[in-house]
Length: 429
Image (cartoon, rainbow, N blue to C red; front, side, top):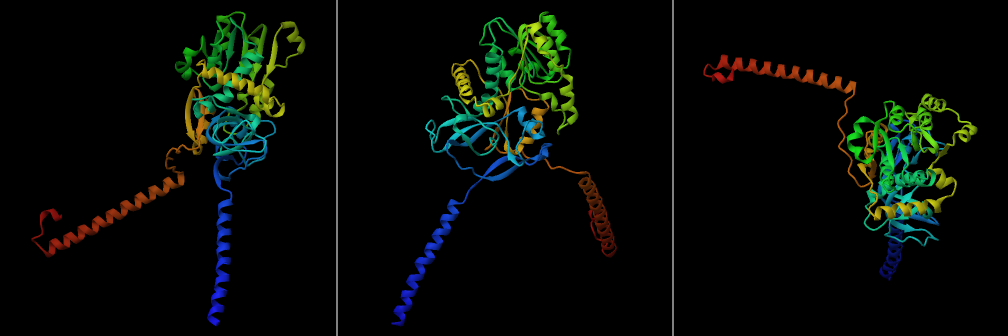
């Protein structure tokens, strides 16, 4: 009977152990998984951009969870890194304002999207990650056949270009347009959109090394470092109808001076405040003080208009998401009709974001720079510091010294052998 009792006790213990193991397995299954993300650890230089593992986001009410396949890199991201934007979030945070990918989950109340849909999104940060959760009102379905990299290259740049040209600038047939940074993503978008309107004269400024790549897209292409105001006045003594300025600083004064009566000066960026790798209060102050303060009566007397445009504020602070959705639909329809096609300069791995940022900062890109979370990073060259170089030299000296001693020992041994054995071959010497 004792054996029966023991057996019964054993039977009671085993299920309990089995349940514990099962719970452990369930806990491991439900534990949040990690994802790769590009995080800004502090405002400043390129070293503040890190690739880290973050918990995968959950999808909340009214949100769409996107498996990111491509992201866009904009000059705005460089400004964010340096901390020269208004009300930046506290570090650390995930960078990026636009992405494209596949829907992996939908939150309660979302009816316009389902798992597996191909979409693009304009995010308030959080785009540069393998997964991101975005309010559905900022998510847009992709047209059939549009690649993720093309979507990331097109979304922000073409929406901005469309709005400043057509809705703010009111571009019409026979007018003239000046756009700075003509070789960048917005510059390419402007050039393609202008071609959808008859007889538009498009003048672009860009660094000289970009001219051969983009000259076919512009009526006139000028070197920004020369006196482009004088050159434009030679083309048209009256000036231009629309100036699209992403630079600010003294270029704002020059742009305003070039506007015809009933013309529009439109500021949509302030790239001139970014000079070095890190934030410079001097460059910010200089850009501000370079700009002439325009009295409204001057606009009244001269029949000119000045406008500003910032997509982030329009979308996230001023609630114009339905208007922006309408513009996205128009831009995607123009792509389907073959009227526009994004130009991708290069695509980079997350790990290579600092190098991609530097390329954009130096204005060496022709077209849009995009990111691919699945792309393998470039092999990193072995970096040698001054100290490591000195150590290598010391090792090289030690090695040579050791080699000379070894040779000397062998020579002495050979001499001894030669003395002890006169029949040693000549080659032994």
